Length: 103
Image 1 (spheres, rainbow, N blue to C red):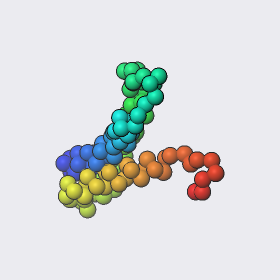
Image 2: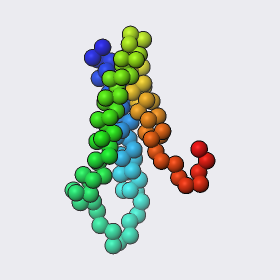
Image 3: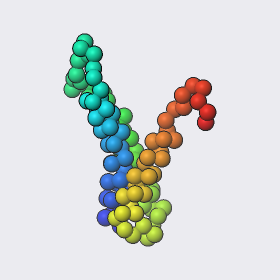
Image 4: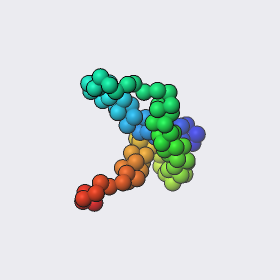
């Protein structure tokens, strides 16, 4: 059961790290105006705080996910995808809607 939990947690970690990683990649491939400076360490820490909180909340959620699935989740692939899908869904549900957007 611990191995299934760890694979589920890895799926959640991947889901948590992909958004800031893609934001970083997009930022590096988007030309910046000359007056804009790079990130300072304090900026990076502030940027990472919400993702760290999300990761912790997701790790706790993984415990519930594994408990709910019980013996039905037997492969590492199922655990990895369940963790990724669950966390990705929570992230999407937790995003505030834009004013005027349907939903």
